[in-house]
Amino acid sequence: MTEQSIIEYLGTPIFGICLSIIVYLIGEWLFRVTNGFFLFQPLFVGMVLGIFVLWLMAHSLKVDVAWLYRHTYKPGGDLLFWFLTPATIAFAVPLYKRNDLIKRFWLEIILSLTIGLLIALYCIYLICKLFGIHDAGIASLLPQAATTAIAMPIAEAIGGNPAITAMACIVNAVIIYALATFLLKAFRLNEPISQGLSLGSAGHAVGSAKAIQLGSIPGSMASVAFVLISIVVDLVVPLFTNLLGISQ
Amino acid sequence: MKNKIIHTQSSAEIKNELPILGQMGSFSVILFAASLISPLFPKAFPVPAPVIGLIILYLLLVTHLVKLEWVERFADFMIGFISFLFVPSGIQLATSLDILKNQGLQLITIIVISTIILLVVIAYTATFFIWLKRLIFHRDVSVEEV
Image (tube, rainbow over all chains, first blue to last red; front, side):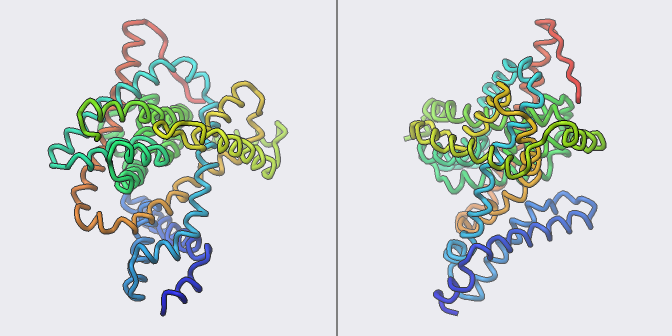
């Protein structure tokens, strides 16, 4: 097949939409038949399977994977991706439903997120140094607590690679969605407010959706965390990199 | 779970719930306003439209300009969908396969560790501040599920 005919047959949004839905449904099915084996989280399976399908197609059609992605999957993928915008706004509802908690704990929330983020940033910095990651790599990994749309421009501004930042954000979400219950148990995190704040910060919108499943307290705390942490990252990360002398 | 189902049923019956198209309308108007505000922020301090939209909807709910039953059902529906909506972002990694090939294992390891660090550090910090409020400032910190 020539490149022209690939675009002609697969270049419409419906290819990307179909592929996304089918791989996700396969993930859901696998998750169900294995009684919820954590590696078979629908999001994780969908992502791996989708990339594998594109890679397989690129190899059999002898084109570049990135080229194939841009011309066949992206039109439909972008369409679905857009719906994350109203889905993000929707988190105002669980947040508002427990507004009583926000009124009582606003100071603790702000302090925990700011100080917690600073400690976490320093730990991430140390881990990167331990692995021998260069400054550009560190700059790409530091903004990952923010939502992708904030993390990427910040990474770029402090001299990182936005593609790595985007990867970090999506991997965060996948890990938290798959391992949240296990991690909360392993680290004995039983306090519902702490559970919510940490799930929202580490797992972004997906982590907040997970927290909502745990209850209305973690749900509302995660919703506030995932917005606030983004803004804290916005303010703190550029200063932090300046302090450590990473950014140019 | 049972409680939740009863709750949504009763809220649909008792309150005057806005039809789904109306709920989508509320979201669209908020989103449109947010997309007008978002470019006003400087490049060094990006605040994307969805985040502004969330804050606007929260403020509208708090000030009772928007009623919960105007947005609740569509919001629950969208949140239930969110992990599917992240599939395209995941598949987008197909364009970064060369980064993954060169330093993938190391990078993924660090990202996994960072995720756990973020989760654990923020959770313990929050627990510490709640403990502080209870023991040092003698405030009531008991919370109840509804």
